[in-house]
Image 1 (cartoon, rainbow, N blue to C red):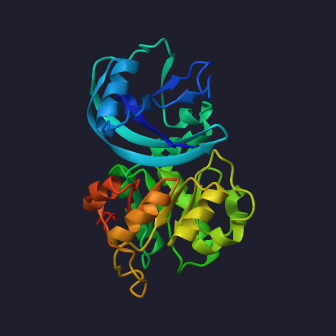
Image 2 (image 1 turned 90 degrees about the vertical axis):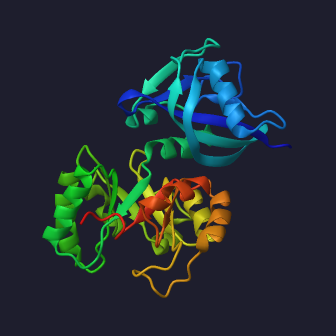
Length: 313
């Protein structure tokens, strides 16, 4: 069965809202919501297909767009490659040119709509930011909390509270304070025993690669309304993350780092090959900073994650 190449757009409007459209009942996966787009014709460039589809379906012309994520999905009756682009500017006023209902929704509201199964990682990618801040080791509680506040004030939207040198009670107390700093402004991801999950209902959870391997054969340990992430270092671990239903991962180390000086770096070329197999959003981690975002996105990553390069001084 030939894989159908489809281009789709995450179109961003005012107040960080995202445009979605409802599929006609007589279409494949009819009655479900989708990100606007359509089939790439033979010999057609993907960007040209994106512009054509958005003009035909919505009456708009994209003026700023970049790759977001590629997903391969096999339905019982069809195999597709979804080539998803982030459209951050456009000309015209979107309307359902083919009679399809449209909705502008917030990140959180995306979870309230039913999408085709292939769209699950796209919904995650649409909701996630470009950068993932991981807190550094060796700081006392006061320094960590002041840094988190500066980061949130500076617009950071995704933070992992990583403090492996702390005793469990210390970490839990720190997490409670960090939850308050991030409330309504940034998504906080915690690390630690899964027995703590119910104590921090507002946070997501970032699994270590060891936890990922332990859990991979079972069910997702956290409700779909909460973010679940994992640390991956290989194609095998990326596959385990997909099997568990993880929302996003970090892939590391991309380059040599001070944090893990003995770890063998993946390098950009190997990372690109791994990203091509990943069916979920991936942050590249290790020796990268905000200036590497464009290259990471072009290779298929959601963005870049980091400790020192992202920590506000």
